[in-house]
Length: 247
Ligand SMILES: NC(=O)c1ccc[n+]([C@@H]2O[C@H](COP(=O)([O-])OP(=O)(O)OC[C@H]3O[C@@H](n4cnc5c(N)ncnc54)[C@H](OP(=O)(O)O)[C@@H]3O)[C@@H](O)[C@H]2O)c1
Picture 1: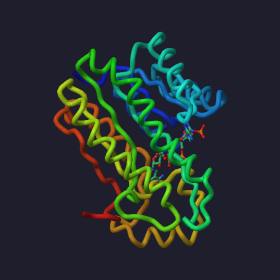
Picture 2: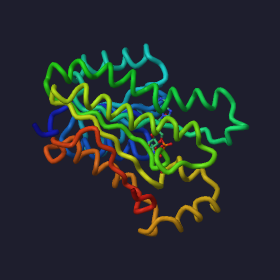
Picture 3: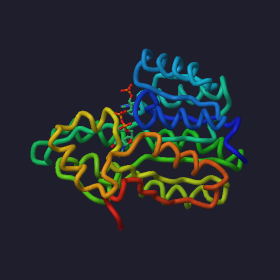
Picture 4: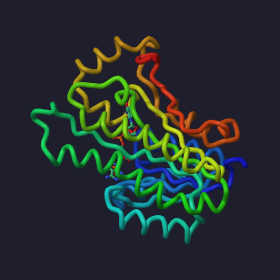
């Protein structure tokens, strides 16, 4: 079963990696719903889809809000049919050393990066089970395995994303649903542009391929995992980091 005609839901599709993933699925013929946190962001996604000739919609969603997730899934189902491809991409950083980290910096990151997977995957799994076909793709980070000072909250969520994926892959495998994780290294987006230049330069020195990754290089893997080529891959975490971390 190819991707063409399927409904793909991509969270955090207004910018960066999520925008590239949404565009790649649209180009592969999927009908794509991309989310942003605001109505303006959702409108910009819709305009971008129009320019790219992609069938789909932009919708507003805060992935921390369970009721909002359920409302969104109902709206998507009514308009396009239930998503059989789910990409849990939305994510944030709230960096601080543990000794200075505030409770809300901890909670915000946990709810956005990890709590969202519980809500969205649960909301989508029933229709995937019924269809006996589904693809859940979660976005982790190289820091899940590598660690990074100042990111205990973020690294904890990303390691959690990988464990979540392995457990869910075992639950859903018999229904033809695969669950995989992509762990990007340093990708050139707003998230990494916000880092101080000295930090970016130090990071670059640790990357054997000598450059930061492009969002499209993550998107290509997401499309591969959802397509026929990825049909026998499940519970896996794929590292895409230019050699920055090897294991
Ligand atoms: N960039 C990297 O080097 C890198 C490396 C490893 C992993 N990652 C992971 O890749 C994913 C995308 O990162 P990125 O660099 O593309 O980030 P980004 O450019 O900062 O974009 C973040 C996206 O998430 C959305 N978002 C933020 N909070 C949300 C919430 N509460 N509910 C719903 N959506 C929310 C944002 O929506 P708005 O536009 O409305 O704010 C935006 O679309 C994240 O999970 C990140 O952890 C990134």
